[in-house]
Image (tube, rainbow, N blue to C red; front, side, top):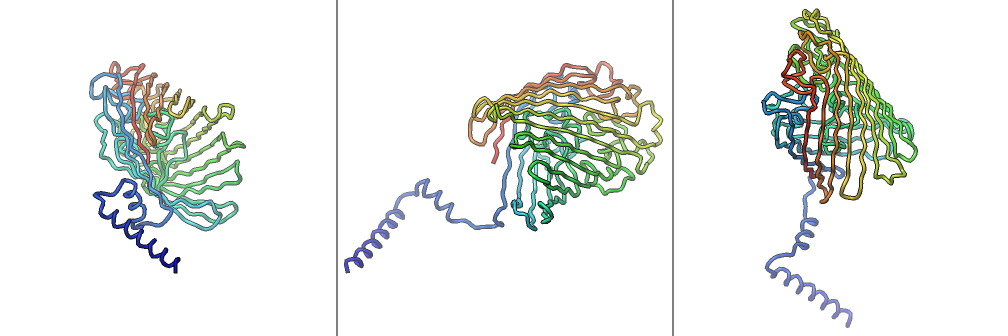
Amino acid sequence: MIKNITAILGVLAALASLSLADSAPEASAQDTKKMVQNNFVETAQKGIKLSGYVDAGYSYNFTGAANGSVVNSRVQSDSAQQGDFNLYAVKIALEKAMTSENKAQAGFRVDVMIGEDAKYLANPSVQSNTAQDSNYLFLEQAYVQLRAPVGNGWDFKVGKFASILGYEVMERPANMNITYGLLYNQFPFWYTGVLSSYKFDEYLDGKLGVANGANSDNNTTTSGESDGVALLAALNVTAPGGNANWSHNFEYSTASENSTGNPTAPTPTTQNALPSNVGSTTAAGGAWTIIYNSWGNWAPKFANDKLLLAFDTVLGNTAGANGTNAGATGANNTTWWGASAYAKYQFNDWFSLASRGEYFGGDNLNKISNDLGNNNQAAGLSWWEYTITAGFNVIDNVLIRAEYRLDWGNNIAGTSVDANAGSQNSSGPAHYAGAEVVYSF
């Protein structure tokens, strides 16, 4: 009897407390949070994650006020003259990752960028101070991921995926520095095709793939202005302990790349600017591109994860097709090479300092300018740059960085990379100062 009375009183007390809560003028913030957590509609499969960032900043190039004055070694959104506010990118990624289980399974990933970087990454041949467009939409990646339970598990990406070449990536906040490096600007950015990967053991993994050609959604023919078919391969070695990597990456394309623009106009800092067809004559299969890239990084254990060292190297060859203008004074074949060295030290939880030094060279100007009518096109290419970047993590999910960069070399600044431009071009030095604020989610 007493137990029953006690139970009834407990129920009445609970009802009374609910009534008092309902009569309160407003719910507390904590109660509201509980309500949001406990009342939702599930509209997607479990395991699908949304992430991304907003990256905005300010850049200042000391290259003069003329609208055509650019630093030819820098990408579009890093080369604008004088002061410029930038919306570099709004990045949104949606992913259903596969688990670590070695069984038949599938997933997907979609990455979208909006902003000034988006326009350049989608159209590498676009190089102009007036070409920045913060409203531009770029589909960075979109692929289906599959796993075949063969051996240790054989994975496949089918669709559009980021390049396997180079140490730097398309996402600025993931790189050590704000600006893109000299070498990064010469690598392919993305492919459309199939990429397979296999992990032999905890120290060795490899990749094999085939795509439409770098930065191209074209078909795999080599006629006309198609970018041809690209064959991809990679081998990555991981040190015991996981604190170092050494990656070897290779691409062979059956046509020179990024040839879908104007085949006779110079386009500063375009990748493999030499066209696969020259003039009005279409030459099928008369061009190729070969790229070997080796990069590595090392976090010495004696530095307690505060120091990161890295390097990046490249050796490439691009040949142009024989067309009506093939007899121009400029050569229609180019070999190019380069090296980068990186260092970053994390002084404490909120402050870091990173530096980058680079060299990029070639036996002629055809890697960066496809103006075969230029009498000085066969002149050698030699570009250098040094960058130092300070990083501040003072608020959760917020990265603030400030940077100084110095570029120098033949025809490094001016209105184009045309060596005939005379006084319009300069060998530098070209100075840059900038800052960015990144919020990641």
